[in-house]
Amino acid sequence: MRPSIETQTEFRAAGIALELAGGQGTAWRVGDVTLKPLDVLPEELLWRDEVAREHSVGGDLRLSLPIMSTSGKLIVDGWTAFPYLAGEHQPGRWLELAKIAREFATIFAEAKRPPFIDMRNHAWARADRFAWGEEAGPPVGAPHVADLVSARRQVFDPPGIVHGDLTGNVLFDCVLPPAVIDLTVYWRPPEYAVAVIAVDAVCFEGAPLSLFEKISPARCFPQYLVRALLFRLVTDYFNGRPVTDYGAYDSAVARVLELAEGT
Image 1 (cartoon, rainbow, N blue to C red):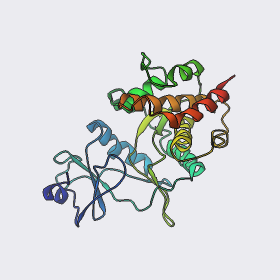
Image 2: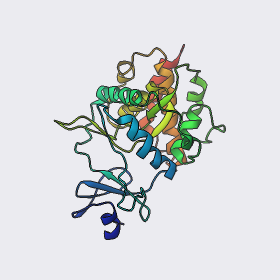
Image 3: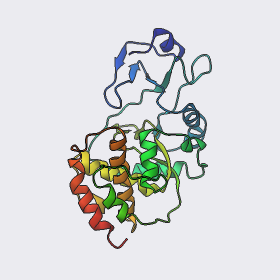
């Protein structure tokens, strides 16, 4: 369903509405504005408008931040708006994504833990908490979970604001700085965000297993890989992915369990 003309007008979006590929298939481009149904808590959207905007001033990344409507609202008839940022997803630039993950964390190094993190109850939030041992009850029937939980050890790096889903949410442009869209905020150590990139790259974009050892110098990085795999596996499970459809994870899990030995 496309946004109404009234909604487009409220967000000063002018032009032909074009459905955008990617994501959950609900976003539309109208001129230089991207319109999408609200898919986060209102408190999270407000955080992006206030806290993320304040901390991103002068940064080296272009961040996708909300547009206020002409009537002073961030949500109009269930829709939100963001600037349309030039660029495209380019698989294979995983080491650059890792650098961007660390830059993103640095931008928010002084930010406090957002209260909305404890309010979220969607599959991704629940899986994140499970991956970090904060939500009990291992998903019955989810492949590899028991082995990964057994390999999980405590880590001691301090947490902060990270983007937990960068792999498909960075747009590269030949002139402009990288653009980070769909700000998916978690409160974790920065190398965890890098681990999610590595897991996504190996499992879904054809990266070699050797990326697990190249993408981060952190000695405890295998422990972040354990958590990143748990996060992706359990998210799929909560979202109803068939148990027979987890083959993409097999080699990654085997290698990460080897790397995690002794950490």
